[in-house]
Length: 121
Image 1 (tube, one colour):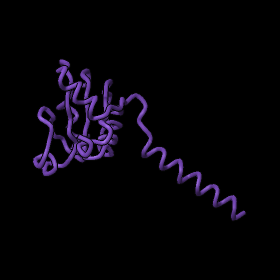
Image 2 (cartoon, rainbow, N blue to C red; image 1 turned 180 degrees about the vertical axis):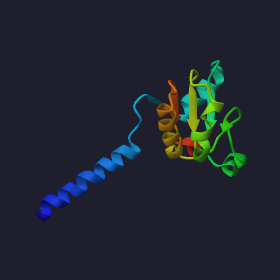
Image 3 (cartoon, rainbow, N blue to C red; image 1 turned 45 degrees about the vertical axis):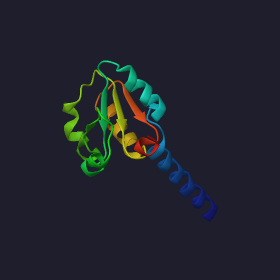
Image 4 (cartoon, rainbow, N blue to C red; image 1 turned 30 degrees about the horizontal axis):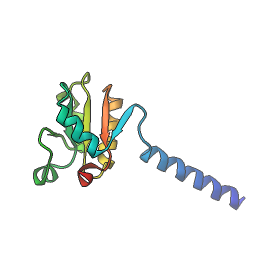
């Protein structure tokens, strides 16, 4: 019986971790090198979003990225167009992944997460 409980705990923990860290269905992933190429090509209609805190953003940010902290994003999605691509970055890629999930659930069609975030920039 103890073995069964231990197996169940391990399975539940694995499922929880997978749900938190697995890429969101329908969210593209790009590297910082691909981001540089995308920004150089100046694709019309692309929205660039930095979900770090205002302090982090002020300390160092990429020109053209709008700062909406992750904690405020749910209330401020109206500042973005759902019909245009949204490229999301944070410091390491974790918050931008959460933001990407939030945007997909809010009805955004084309969401791209920058892997590695500003740390890889």
